[in-house]
Length: 100
Image (cartoon, rainbow, N blue to C red; front, top):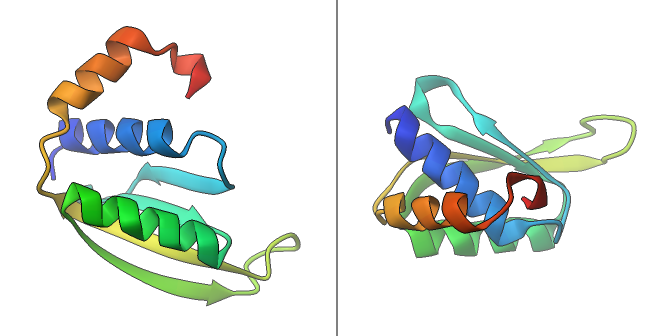
């Protein structure tokens, strides 16, 4: 996926999740988007969102990742089918970036 699609996807995910649960999201190598969540419930939310977006993704679980978290789920989204350009434009236009 190109950089614009990555940015649109990250913006859409951040807007959807807000502060519902702890997560980390970033651009990754090979033009993918990398997401880390720390509970089974939050993994379920992300996987539902991936399905809604028509995303192509992989995920896995890592054990004992740091002093705070016993495990983390890692999701790598390589592409998605839904066109988020209009959604991202509206988000940028109407939502303060500090609120995301």
